[in-house]
Amino acid sequence: MAPGSSLGTAMTKSELIENIVAATNQSKGSVLAVLSELDVQLESGLKSGRIVHLPNGTHFEPIGKKDGSVDIGVRVNPELDKMVNSGFRGIWANSENIGKTEDEIVSMWNSVYPTDLITTD
Image 1 (tube, rainbow, N blue to C red):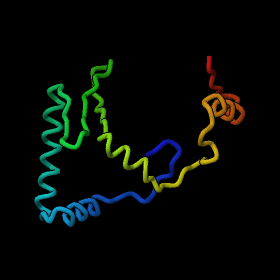
Image 2 (image 1 turned 60 degrees about the vertical axis):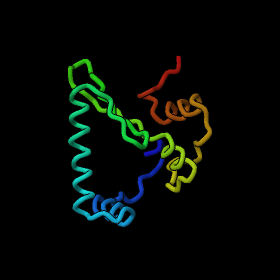
Image 3 (image 1 turned 90 degrees about the vertical axis):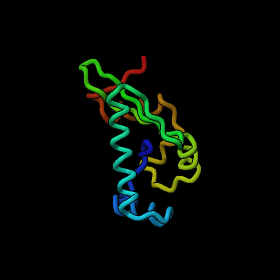
């Protein structure tokens, strides 16, 4: 979700699968099988400490935490990022704050939440 945006109605798993089936002319079973195998391959690569690159430019990276657990970082295909930003149709929450500086936002926060002040030293 973009910072400050409101979530629209989520695309369901079924809708995503139906869209892929319609776009590729593959069967629902084959689409589900490929997505399932993608999960298996992602898990295998990440468990071995490897970054996994998808052909579209998206990649997944295992990130070790100091407690020994692993987070998974995802970097989305930069072209997808550009396309979403150029045609974003979501509804921005607090759109009146777009373009304000960090200091202005911090000042607004501090006036609303005086017991939870943010300092900008």
